[in-house]
Image (cartoon, rainbow, N blue to C red; front, side, top):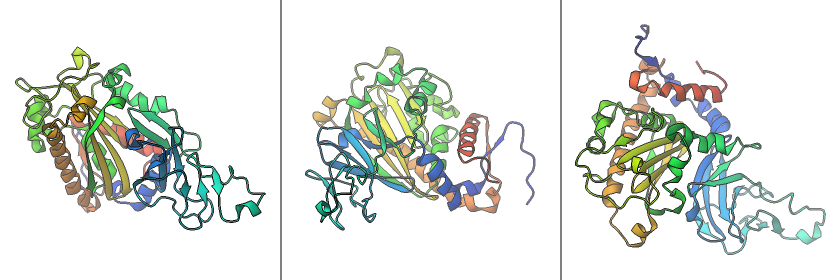
Length: 376
């Protein structure tokens, strides 16, 4: 099959095998997910010492817990004795320590080995040396971010810097006080598509008029294919007569206290590479965390966050949740429709990007640089 020259207004995408090749996915696990800061859990989910959650980060399973002094801690979820997984559940609570169910090697919540059968007969065993393998952890926006790299990249440059790049400064996102908000709703989506298709979809709005009628009713400029993340500092404005970021445009909740006047009635979207989407509207924040599990499977966990008094009062958040839940379902269905074609001979050399999608090419350049160049 011959491929005609690309028209000047179009740009080439990645070839199809970038979305189907298990070896490329393995390289992404190594060079991206295991090397960059990865948004793992919401800090409030670890509500007391001994509370834990386990998450898959690249090829590693990571255990995140809270120490007896209240500090979050992250470790590889692997016993140092024979490699058994310490915690097999996605979440739970331990009383005082973490104990391996295989041979009862026991670790405190700071990861130090404190007990094991016959350990007193092995005085040469350094309990700190044989403690759990620690993983770097930072908290931002009320979430625990982990990095498996021995020398993690600058958090300020690679994570917080994404907000600065999109909004122009850190103050614009800090005004939402995301770390102080309460969880109103969480939905987990198991998407049968490559993680990059989901990122690319989030980065453009060329599809919005086609598959997002509810969203374009609230944000009319999206119907023209405008990319919400493309222009620094600009937020898509609510339409005339729209009272809130809800499925029918009805009124939501009071504006978050520190949100500026020029941020009112506007929607901002931020991509924090590799796997986080942040959506800011005047009365709540929606945050997506992606967990790529295979070249054709990605779990997306989406949190809707509101002012604490809204959640405490038992307010009905269903209309605001329903708007973005529909957007998610529509987007993920589109990605699942696209995934099978990535293996088609028609997509062997990839597709094309129209002008309003050209910024996706920057994402492709970033990806190939992380993988050490193109995989033709």
